[in-house]
Image (cartoon, rainbow, N blue to C red; front, side, top):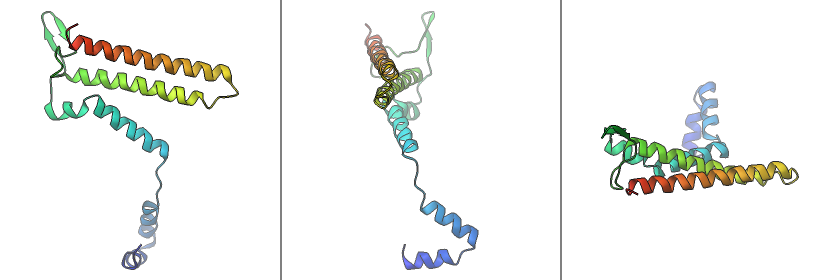
Amino acid sequence: MSRKVKKKVSSLPYSINRFYRKISTAKPSTLILSAIAIAIAVFLFGGGLYTIIMKPLPSVYYGGRFLFLYPQLSEQFVTDSVIAMILYSLGIIGLILMYQSTKYAYKTRQAYMMFVVGTVLIFIAYILLETTINIKLGG
């Protein structure tokens, strides 16, 4: 810190000085930082920014049924974003499970089960994302 800032901080009352030092030297947890980064990525990839800016309809009742996926790629409903975010989250959870399975080298059964569950989650997320794109394309 510069001398000017140190001088001002040292002249503050003790409780404020202690609070300032605690905040200025805080080191956030890497787990929390990575969780925030993943949440932001899922939000952006899922179309959350589009939903906030354009304010689309949640869903539509048309032709005697509810439409949760907009039938074209150029637009989307709020439920399009929610479905995409859920599926991206499912895939990321699968990736995390696959990564965590490497930590159980001496517990082969647990490592294998975590790896299989992670693989299945990734596969389900991929298939459902492809299905939603095909529905939007009119297939």
